[in-house]
Length: 356
Image (cartoon, rainbow, N blue to C red):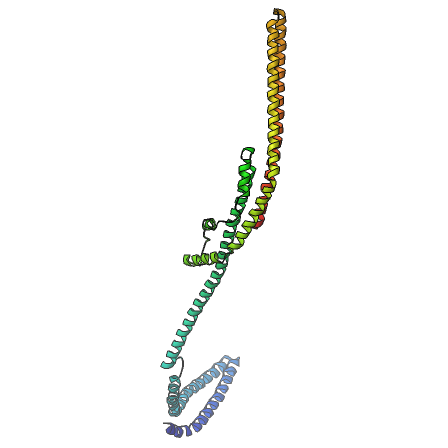
């Protein structure tokens, strides 16, 4: 086929030269005709113009007809070459299409596999991104959960310690003379060691909210934090603070006793003064009644009026004595309350500082 093509193509050069020559001649004639048309339209004389246009129109018609014939002849003369060229082109394109990635069966299959793989990569990246986001979210939430658990346990322990110290202080403040010895011995024998059997109930807390962890994962974190928590440190701190509080209260027992004795002394003196005043008034009333009984009518009326005035004055005096005694007792109680409140405030501030 290729050998035959060479023979055909040998004459192709002469044919192409002939075509170029005929085309150039036709173009020259076409140029002459266009000039003739312009000349014909340029005549001002109607008859001359009409005659010139008719002549150029006939020439143009003949030219176009000749061009059509020439084109057909030129196509016919090169048909063998161009048809052969089409065949050869087809032969080349067929072979090219066998490896065309967009047309060949294997190329299409390969590209299909590549597209499939690319889609898988996209999906895998999406899964990887989601996994990375989940991992990051879990890491953040895990840190928050652990911080929450540590804080919850610590707050419970510190609250328990603060409540324990406040209860001991309240018990000390409630000591009175009748139970002073018993309470003093109880304070001196008080244990300052934390009882581990109370721990499980003490450190209970509400679970934190979870969004990316499962309940099983949360339980695992809780167990891990429970095991890692330094309870021994709290036990030592519990013992230290209660021992210090215990000793400070023991040191205050003498002043507490003096305070109670002073309050009792004030109350006893007030009661003794009241009893003495009552007796004095009773004796004065007895004497007045004897005088009234012995007096005549005129004197009796005078004495009864004087007795009534004396009773009012005595009642007022007794009332003033009782009010003064109540004031002294209230002042002593207020001083005790102020001391207790100051001590309570100090304990509260210590607890808040420890929690922070």
